[in-house]
Image (cartoon, rainbow, N blue to C red):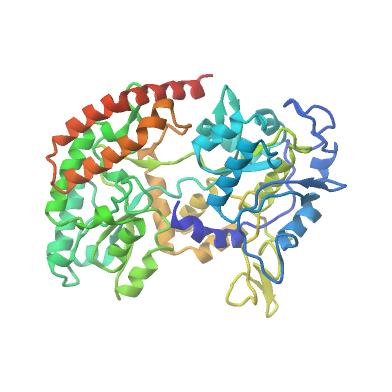
Length: 559
C-alpha cells in the first residue's frame, strides 16, 4: 500500500472510534476454564465475554513496534495501555518493543535459533519463509478452533467470504495465523490523467489502449501548456525494481494483453501460471518498446522508484499516472502546487487490442497477522482485544462515548464548547496510539463509504462524516471508478512460502526477467528475445516452480 498506509493512519485514528460493546452471537458465556476445543487450556472466566473485560486483570506479552508518545508518556505508561487495562482488563508484561522492522526480524530469528520463549502473541512480518519457520518451531497453536469459538462475526464473515486470506497461513491442513483486516480494493490501479489537458484538447475517456496512445500523442505533440515535445513524457511509470507495483506500475498494461505480470494467475484450465511468461506479455513489451521510441515514456524510468515516477507527473511533464484511489492525498497536492491551474481526474482501465483488461488485485483484505503461543495462559485474549477494536472502533455509532476520537485531549477535544478533531485547533494533538494489532478496519467500509459520497448521498455516521471531511471529492470519485471495474481485478493466487526450487532459483529468474524486459523496452534487444527468455526461464527452474506452485495451491484449496 506504500505511501497511503502512512497517510491513512492519522485519519483512522480520527475516524475509527469506539462505540458501546457489540453483543453478537459469539459472546455470552462461551469461554470456560477447561479445554477450549483447540487443545489448550484457557483461564478466561466464564463471564469475560459478557463483561467485555478480564476481572481480575491478566498479563499478556506481545510485540509493540516503534511508537511516539506525548504528554510525558512512555511505553510503560500511556493512554492506550491505561485504556486497555480499564476497558479489557489486560496489561503488558515481558512485551517486546523492537526499534524497527529489521531489528524485530533479527530478534525473532535469534529467538528461534536459541529456543528462547517467544511472547504470547507474535506479530508475523510479511515474510512467507519466516512464517514457515515460526510454524515449524513448535511454539504456536493452530488457531482455527479458537477463531471459530471466539472471533466476532465481522471477522468470521470476512474470512468466510475470502477463504484465500488463509492460504499464506495454512500448513499441514491447519491454520496458524490470525489475520488482521485491511481495507479491500484500496490499492487497485486506475489511471490519473491531467484533466485540464483533456478538457483543452477536447479528448474523451480512453476505452482502449489505442485511445490512450492517441491521448499520449496529443499530450506530447500538442501540449496545452505549450511545453515542447522533448519536455513531455506522457506516461509516468517505474521500472526500477519491478513493474507490477503500487505507483506508476504496469500491471494494467500487461493485463490489457492477457495476463497481469509478476504474479501467479489462473489459466483457462484453472491452473496457476506466472503472468510474465504468458504469450501476451510479448505483445505488451513490443508496444512498450514502441512507446519508448516515440518518447511517451521517460528514458530514466528504469532508474526510477515509485515516488520518482510520481514526481514526473507532479512537476507537470507527464499527463498519465497509474495509481490508487488515494492519489489525491499523495502526490496530487504537489501537482496543484507546482503547476497552477492544473486539474486531475481518475479514469477506468482501458482494454487491449483483443479486449483483454486486468490489473493486480489483493482482495484478501489482510494487513498483517498474529500467532498464538501454545504456552499463553489466555490464548483467547488477542481475539478479545481485536474483537473489541472491530466492534467498537471500526464503525462507531453516533452518541457513543468515543464518537469524536479515541481519547479526549489527544486526537479530539472540546474547543469553544464544540467537539473537534482538527489537529490545528487541538493543543498537543496526538493520534499514534500503540494498538497491538494496529487500527481496526472493516474491509469493505472505506471504499463503500467513498462511493456513497460520490453518489451524492449524505454522510450520516461518524465514520462517514470523518471520511467526507478528510477525503477530497476527487478521491470519492476515484473509488467509484475502482468499484465499477471490480471484475477486471486479477488476484495473485500464490501466497505461500517459497517452494524448494524458488529458494535456490527465484532471485536469478527475477533478475533475468527484469533485465530482459527492460532491454526489450529500451530497444537493446529485439522483441523476439522474449521467446528465448521464456525457454530459459522454464529450463532454469521456472517449469519446476510452476509445478510446485500448483501443488501448493491444490493443497490449500482442497476441501
